[in-house]
Length: 223
Image 1 (cartoon, rainbow, N blue to C red):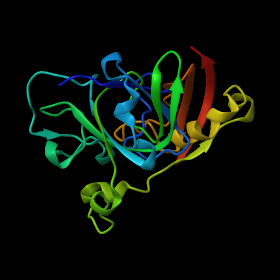
Image 2 (cartoon, helix red, strand yellow):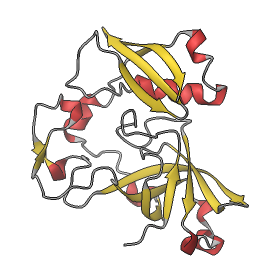
Image 3 (cartoon, rainbow, N blue to C red):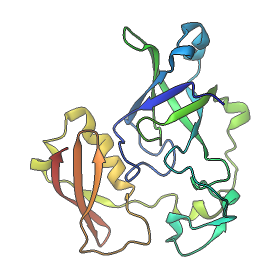
């Protein structure tokens, strides 16, 4: 398969990326096509759709071998599930599938026609293998059962982001960043209330701790 495009956003490392697509609204990403696929004709009609499917590679999780079970982080890392019953990146073929909202089709001088999307759970630079329209009458199943993921669907923490630290973040990035932090980026098996965690978000290093369900930002520095 050929890489047709790469995504660009504020997630420059795996830590902190939303665990599923669509969880964080306001988080924009730009899809830039590789030169052989930078033909605007290939996108004719795409603006008529509100959402898209992205088929992509877990490029930071490619490994040799195959394990039939994995430890989902949301189960505390202590319970094994079949790999095909999870969305773990550690798969026989490191392929991801995400549904994103199409915000706009944008024409640029340097990169040709690009797609601006919302709600992606991909790291900056991730290779995309294909893009397909999301079709609600076939792709949406409101009565679907979500297995073990249903039990943790509404999990979130309260975010305490001191104003003097939040003011260091550009205004248009603040709401998405807080939404990312509300998802609690820590692996579920790490519950040390004294530990200071760090995640990269755009040009900033965000440090925080979590205690009694409250995530408190302790430091914001440019990287």
